[in-house]
Length: 358
Ligand code: 3EB
Image 1: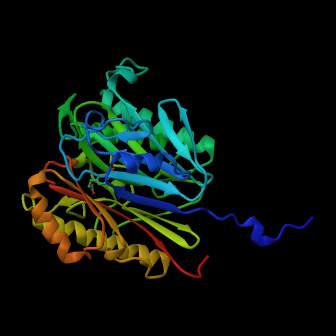
Image 2: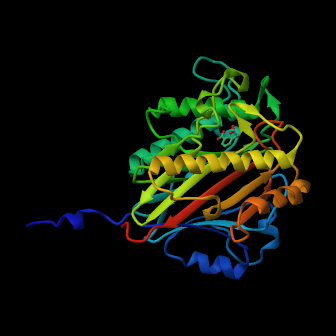
Image 3: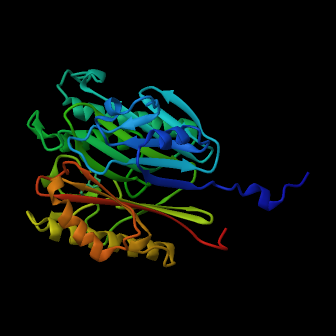
């Protein structure tokens, strides 16, 4: 029997994301969608206002403030099945897996094997990432494309260390323990924001196919940040790019007003917004260079903007309006950012289609 070469090249399926208003009707129609990978809401009062619609399968991120009343939806073109392993809830198609994990101090031991006290958040981060890597390795989705981290009281201090820095120690420990070394293996695009004091919540998207990690020439790679930002560097890449045949998906990490490794424009949210967008433009240029085609520009992206102070929204919106087409979706949320002097963090995603390149 001969198998034609074409039959062996599996269609990788496509990825769709959208930001929709969480009406009962919209959620009801989603629950019957075959290719539904994940639904995320940032409303903490979701349960109480909602009457009748089941909340099962909708991840709620406990942000401390409000923002746009939208749900983030991830879908694919292939059938999806759901499951649970350890503390992870996931839904997966043949090519993609969307999952989330929520951990609190009660889920981790207070001391390590040497009897030393370990900050619970550090242990939660380590356990969350180890469970994620174990799931991805065992289920055959080796490429962690994109991950969102919501860290309780991110700028708060306990055990003499800021929570974000505790998180970074646990996260890096897990990457190294699981043999995922920055620069040798792909590390994911990411966002890290503050949530209300409570659990660590992480959600992620992984793929069977390999993505390409992209760095920003204007910024020190986060995994090379010097020790002044904490004992362990943050483990994420500036962007990840995946080729799905006709579709090319770009995930740009949470991007802030940082040049090299230093914060710029402390106290000036308008200037921080412009610098963040200049960084996003640089990441796009770098992606186009790596892909050897002009695939993307600022107008192809959908944006999620996290504001430390929601009252800054009109200023930030005015800056974005000067740089991006009004047709581009922009989703505003209130959240604390990982450095005290950062007022805004912007992430962006694009899933463009190219004709004739299947
Ligand atoms: C920065 O560039 C800003 O720790 O996963 C952005 C995106 C930031 C992801 C993370 C942190 C993270 O360092 C903060």
